[in-house]
Amino acid sequence: MAKVEHTSDARVLVGIDISKHRHEVLIAVPGKTRRRRMTITNSTDDFMRLIAILRQYGLPVRIGFEATGNYHRVLMYHLGVAGFDLKLVSSVALARTREALHNSWDKNDPKDAQVILHMLQIGAVQIFQDPMVAGTNDIQGLSKTHDAVSRSKTELWHRILTHYLPLYFPEADRFHRSSRTDWFLAFLEMFPSPHMISAMTKEEFTTAAWEVVGRKVEKSLLLSDIYETAKVSAGLPVSPDSDAIRMFRMMLAEGRSLIRQRNAIEDRAVELLGDRPDYQLLRKIPGIGPINALTILAETGDLRRFHHHRQFLKFCGMDLATVQSGMFRGRSKISKYGNARLRRTLWIAGQTAVLKKANSFRDKFERYIAQDRHNPDLRRKAYTAIAAKMARTIHAMIKSGEPYRPFFEGTSPGGRTPLCRAVEAGS
Image (cartoon, rainbow, N blue to C red; front, side):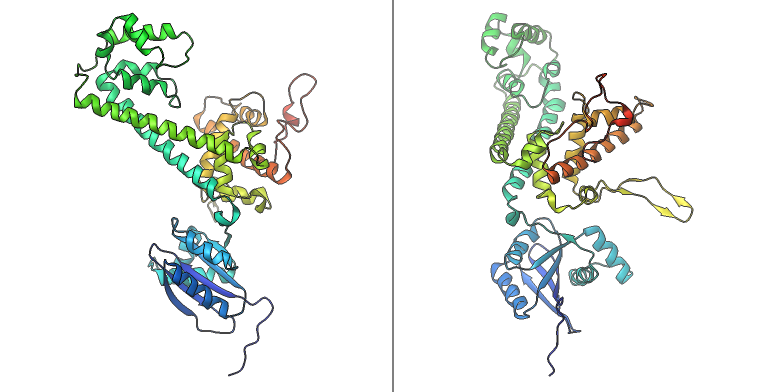
């Protein structure tokens, strides 16, 4: 059999369809028309078996895969450590390519491996950055856990506001100011029913609740207001030792526990990232606090891998997409084919930035809504533009290493920046 000669850029291409318990593998070797198909389980032994097989070819190996939950992480870590080139395939692109190649919506794992291999051959792949290798695994753990805790706290808080308070202390809702504070839940845990308050004298109630409400301005007036409200409350007259009150207190204790968990994660995030230059640069941008900075670093990894801000916008799903056919042209809007958590973080950061003192984000927002300040559709578009500007600013700052400046030109002698000279920071 004649020996096959390989060019200098020849490489083995591998398409892997990921699933929970097993993975379908399709291997294409240069010079061979027949592809090798195999199935491996999600185990170390099969990972090592696949690595050994790929090394036997003596050629560079490029592996393509579609991210499936977190099931791809362990396999890709082992393949990356083995020195193979890893490429990510977009789920949307994979579905469209599968339909185009097979003229069918039929889907199965071996067919997906074929489509992934085809996308590798035509270069329709994305960069994959392994969090373990990039050193962002801890940051991602903090970020995703904070998101899960925050969602659980919000869900429980809504349950308290819509179920428990309307039954037992409906008037207490007006004393609530922020879901980030613990004092309101602690107060309700001590006094879940207004009848427990009205059974005491005002002096006795003030003494008992003084330390619970925390350091409040005009604390005496607040407690007096709560006491007078409790005396005329329409809440159900349930017994303090009833199972209903016991369940209410259980929910309140869970809410306080979630607040403590969230605060501990935020403190750890500041401790872990406080000395990192990228984190310090992000914190200088209006609207980006510790958790927003944590999420951005966790979801993007090293921002410097995006050579242009358009690549970063596409990664976030904030690139513009337009449907056009013949004479018809639809409205341009953001694609939303990207990282949803990152896109939400940029949106929240932008909304916060426009509320702060003079900066380029607020200036752009004011100019955008100047025609009709109360038009909700125009304001929504303005917030979208601010979120995109936030992404461009973040990319420019991390790439250049320079801190945020509200306006490149500085302020005019009159104290404000003319609209004709207001340059978007980072754009």
